[in-house]
Length: 615
Image 1 (cartoon, helix red, strand yellow):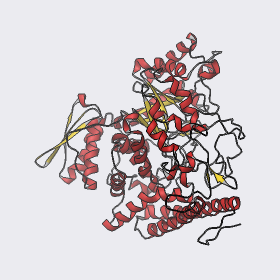
Image 2 (cartoon, rainbow, N blue to C red):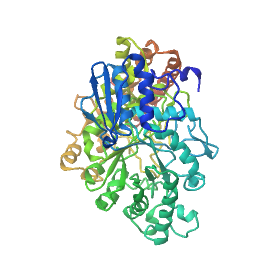
Image 3 (tube, rainbow, N blue to C red):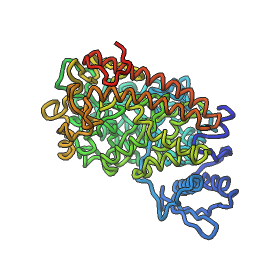
């Protein structure tokens, strides 16, 4: 790590000291942070550990002294909350403060080779060359960052499990424990992704979840794993999805597979997180009846109530795959008797790949407002971390990591408040500069949406690597990701008269989406197939709205770049931020010109404002 970045670790800009190696418990970490940060400010807190509080804490003042009472990890969270409030001029929380979601997890898609699937911040922080390889000091800093944000579980290996990661259940266990030991003082527990077919690779001739030999095999694996890593949080599984093995090969249900694994880990308090990302990835593009967004609900809704108590079904926020905009998954309304985890994506696969600036809090606020925080009992996000000096590729992508932890703790937060916290924790700016940066971050999502895929259009990206425009890139492929654009119209009819997808929602939402006049305009082309002459609510035609959004998106990206150049960021960030803003502007230009030209060539309708569209 460069010397410049050693002086400022992500958002913990004020914490410039190195963490000692001998921290073993969250209470010790809390004492260290309180002593080194708060004591020099004459605000040293008195710490009282109360095991009954768990992850919760309470902050009170006694004269000039702060008193923090908390559980084993809550004590540390309380110290960090006090630091956060003092640094950002925030209000000290009153009463006992506890996290809304007990499981607040990062899913790392790191492979033991050192590469990261959909990774945009360099290579893995902890794997290289088929083995654990990391800088202990940096992993301690990682633990500090996660604890400061309120994240308590890290799943360290890719859900698409590759060899030699199969060895995580065997010869690599001592390395897993050594890694867990570094993160333990910060209340961060590990989770492991497993391959459903592992018994086949270890001597059995079947992985049938109802076969007693398979059940016993997994029980023995759990015994060995928890004997070595006693505080392991559990297993994460991707099964029967995108060619991953699963219970369907044996005529069994996903509940059969998940419950078998859940019963193996239950004696140790472990959870079994089962990803609900399933669909037919070998669809014939000529088939206009099969609709990929319908797949997860069709499979899992009939199984509601069939899963064991320690199974958590992890559901992506939308029915597709982390698109720029899509409706919330109907599974959040259709599984009231199943524990669910909301899955978000920090890794900016479809949202700019940590080149284009894209602050996620406004998107997450919309998701919580639509589904209601109570519909999920846990929360997870695909991490955006990597070995780059600044951790997240784009320095400001660290905002999204911080914000995920804050929303996992308190899903009622407003985007403006979270963004303001991060800005003040990260930079020392004048008030007017703070306001500019906060405004840039708040609007960055809408800017990106305008010049890429407005109105709920999805998948207009280059296949495989998913960066840059390709409006027909997936149109004739087997992934079920189509826009069906022709000379007259664009979009897919997902109403009761079309694929029937709207029927998966509760009546109020179904009726909202079903009707073209009430459907939110930013989702109009997700739910409806419309002619280019369709009149939007402001009187513009659909085709003119498409043109306008792409031109405006480019202009706004250009304005953002100009504002970032004059913001006065510290040198350690400024060069990287400006370089990526230049790349973003090139990307916005390509999106604008490719998509506008695509629709102009199809429709033959000129831009009313006479702007340049290439023929």
